[in-house]
Image 1 (cartoon, one colour):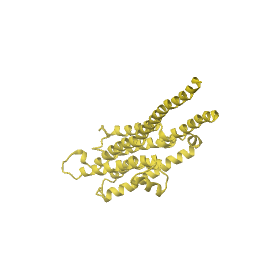
Image 2: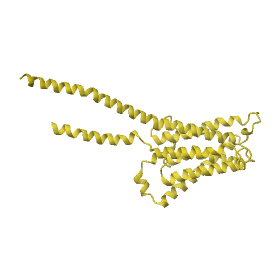
Image 3: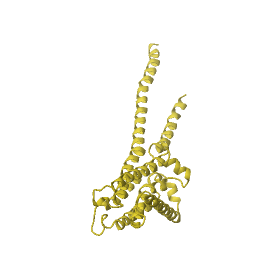
Image 4: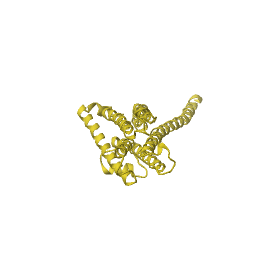
Length: 270
């Protein structure tokens, strides 16, 4: 009986170690790099001489898209974007050719998404015969902020994208992250477009400034939303369950001590 009791704690330790990987799905470096890349792109929002969103929107948006591309290219090359961070063995086994191929696939997929978004913008009222460069660069920025996270997290399959972006409640953590970033960016960018036809005669109502500003704002809202949903809540839930487990063990311990004391009392009487 004693040997069986001694073997049980080792099994519990092994099971706890396996559960830790499920409780803590994100490494800190992935989140820090994501925040750093986003804030470096948002730094361009302030008007500057020679790079003003109000006066030269195409040039401004080209620089902003380049910064976003470099940011996602570095994360794709290192394979440390968000939930892929714990896969250390797979990262080491990839060759430079495979990493460059992944960056190229990411760039082409984002470019194709930008073309699709620009066509959607034209269908919904964007200038069709003028300002082509402004529309395309704005669409590329929106694609980087909304579609690229899904490109890096989801499998290149129609069912995977449909399950993540069109499902009411995505189940896996990458699906939740991709869905949150996509819909928050798209919805806020769509809502910001309603300021364009208003007759306020403000410089920030010029096409496509509201679209881009809404995309950046929606991306920040989505980043906060998915961080709380995919990181903070699971960690708090895991800590709560661990605390409850410790409490149950502390409650059970006095009962076992009482049983041992009751067994020792007859011996002392004898």
